[in-house]
Image 1 (cartoon, rainbow, N blue to C red):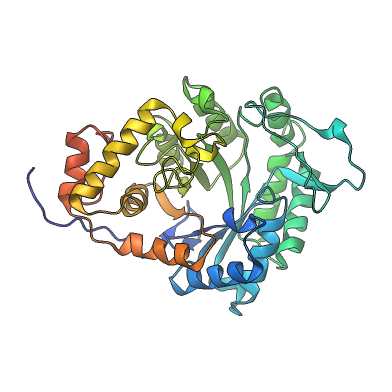
Image 2: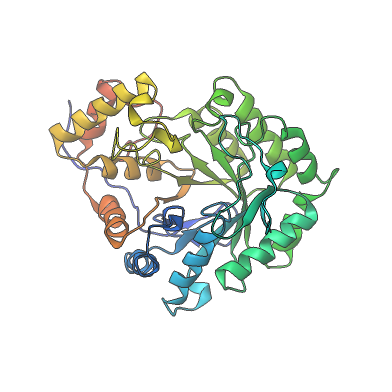
Length: 377
């Protein structure tokens, strides 16, 4: 080992999103966990406030999270800040419409590739998830999100879950809905952007248990590039494809983004919570026991925790700083469901990691040799 000097990387200065005029705080807020029913509304308000106090100016949500619950709750949290709307960047997602289904209609049920519900109906509200990426649907979804959020403007819209996991037999139909030669979903997004109603267009890019098979060959990467040819994207939200445990986004996704001046926002930098709580939560959104994670993931996780223990570096610190260090990455949006978790994210990016930590990971083959680390070069 060569040096114990510290690595210095700027994790606080706002970064540009694609070629747009938007600049986002590198530390953002992921709104999935606040949709959990047992999280109280006051806790949501306090969590959003803690994120704001810690410098977060990028907030992410989606109709899918809690079947509308995340958008409603995030809107309340942002309202309680009493700050001008132009002081933060707000992202939500399109592709799913929430349809009221007063009488249960099981013919609307469908399954994802892993057998989980693809179009669930929320038992509390009676809203049914319905996929649609067409022109009319995207305009409708945008308006619906504004209503749930209680705001007149959303900065960015992200195409949600276009992958082989959620659309095992429907993928070509989805692309037809999106295509300008089909049902013109891309046209709707371009209209919203050109009219100033939104500032940027994104796409979600997941590597999770539901669609992991499509990353074994080039299928998912081919799909991402097909969408890039259909939609003028400004950013990708990458979940699971670039973490301390998994760097397959380096193969083609990140190079494609760099070539097209598309930024990346990293969702789930802790691999669905697995990195900080192995064996207590499923790996990358899996509902299975943590012990059912792939063996190589379990072994690498143990190795990472060993090095963290030896060099006194919290695993969450390393995970967050690692993903924020890549040059195509504009931000990371770890989820938080309490003020403590929101405060921890700031502590993670302010922690001073010795360079020997990254050297040790590479020496033990716990980190891809082509993955840039803080302090390189």
